[in-house]
Length: 312
Image 1 (tube, rainbow, N blue to C red):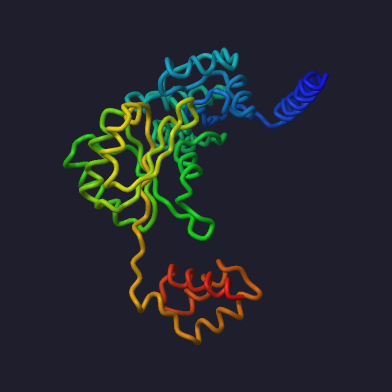
Image 2: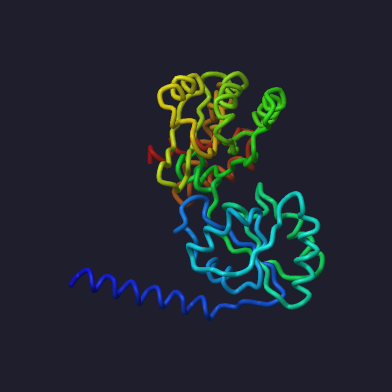
């Protein structure tokens, strides 16, 4: 009986949510940029599902990849190809459809279109033509990897998304060196065939102590997220052949901070007014004010504020 009640309750909830999607605005002559699952088909949002059903055509990076998703969700909207090799032509076709009052959905193979995937030219052309672009957010391999690794904080949320790693070793090392200038975690995509080479190049460029998180097959059955020092990557790869299988998000952690005495030794006067401010403001706000009023680096001020907070 309890199971029946649960199923009935879920049915009511789903019907209520579907009703909400029915009541939302679904404008014509509009490009719907729809994020789709990155692996787990059940990660599709109800709003994305309804948009794909309601559109007159779906512009897909690869129609063969998109078709199984549509079949799983019972969507029979016609497909057209919109990939990097025909994006200019596809954009013209899409603008023509919008001129005719149609709704067009734009999807990539997985995740968010126009983010390290084809679609940005189409979005720009549609906007230039004066038509509305309606983004429907959803799954993202980048955000999923950040959620799984904890490399950012609410006090320091900055990160960089570098996209796909270059395929040639010399270009890859130069590219990795460029990203080493960023003062925060850097996320990048890599496939199975070059994973080992990329990680070994990271070892050479970043050194053995740098931390990296290898996020494999995110949202899929064999999802794995493992954090290790670059000195350990070859042994980790050799330990299990599965470690080199799947699609990867690599998270290069920020360089360890090596504070000099000048950076870590906050003067007594600054500490005193920071202590007073902490009775009324958050650590984040106090650090912001201290950064504006002094020449100390943010990390040193943040460590000092935390220490003062703990002291009460």
